[in-house]
Length: 141
Image 1 (tube, helix red, strand yellow):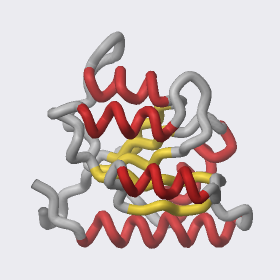
Image 2 (cartoon, helix red, strand yellow):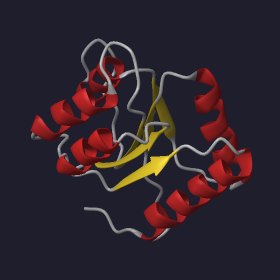
Image 3 (tube, helix red, strand yellow):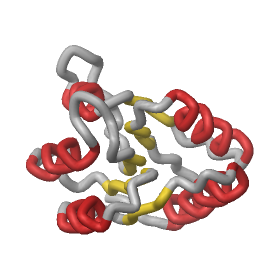
């Protein structure tokens, strides 16, 4: 996958967190397309093309918050893993929830990582930089 960027989806309901991710992408010159959905229902609709244009290509990575209205991150993740077309997308939980039950449930649904959102902006920027290094080095089918 040399010199090829992959699409990424952010599923996040908090506008400040969305802007923080977008700023981190800009600061670290991350050129991947970032699709934003504000809850799990909207994300599934975008991925499946239900009431929204279907995302083509599908994102290879989803950055997913857990605490969201309508459909939380774990409910979204369960639906994604049950969908034959979407089940292989790599998911990184990006959340403020340090609840052990959430962490266990996420890993039982095969997440690639569980990252606690740091309150500190510098640490958050570093988290996105490290994620960028990961997806830049990973080979995808």
